[in-house]
Length: 70
Image (cartoon, rainbow, N blue to C red):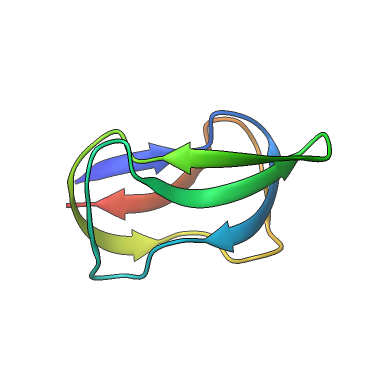
């Protein structure tokens, strides 16, 4: 199981995948708003989304786990 973590603090404004979706390495999976900019967060690994750990509107800190990929 691989973790996709936030690379900066911000508010989740979009979750671009659903549990069970296949993702490829480099694919954007979550969109954060940070310092009034939209920042895409990409998966560093390919696989199947096992669990999404955040919801739209959640504030996350750098390093927080956004989702799990198996």
